Length: 318
Figure 1: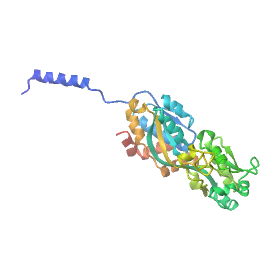
Figure 2: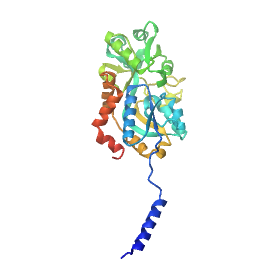
Figure 3: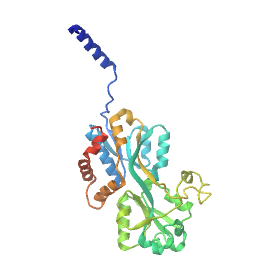
Figure 4: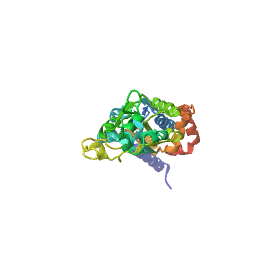
């Protein structure tokens, strides 16, 4: 039988051993800075992630940031997490940031991105040959999409300049008789679509998915030459041997990215961010509720949290 003195020595030895072992990693009490951009889906995605992290006990701070310029902050750790980096428009900036060793790809969100030139079906009779991009080369087609400010050139309504997308370069490389006009905001872009559609007026614009617009309006995306990384980076590749961007936009994942130090400073939050997963249909429904039904991002987020408790608790190991 072990004596009381022996037991005491064993207990002390165990305590000393426990003190010598490193403690389990805990998340820093410092705020995790999540970036906010200027479109509804990203605000929802980020608020959901933020609320999940708060439920896990993390301190969360939301920071308004430019979609592409945010990488400067992510590289220095002044910003921590960006919940939506679209393969269609942000891949080059993301890859460049990751190459510095200061930014990490936290994996796919589960949503698939599509962004391209889009037109209502009622315009197809006025521009025979669509959705093939060659139809846009015809002067009559360009004029059908023109406005007083662009005639005889067609008008293409692009997203805000901060979204990137290389539409100006695409017009030049493919010698399209179109003028790119950039909408000031996401809201302005879709308000103009709504107005034109109601009047059956000509419009060609940037439409993206996941979003409610492709479901609400009948239309098609223009079919440009298929994207390849070489098309963007090597002028000799593609239909124009002298210019890059002579192809369509890439399709693919919407990624989560962030400062490389997140995994060490907030290991629990890091695991939850990597586990985050939402699909297009689910996000499209929530965007519809905000943009068309008048709910706030916060209301939609709270409803999602209540309806998906088992799901998000698994992300934080509860």
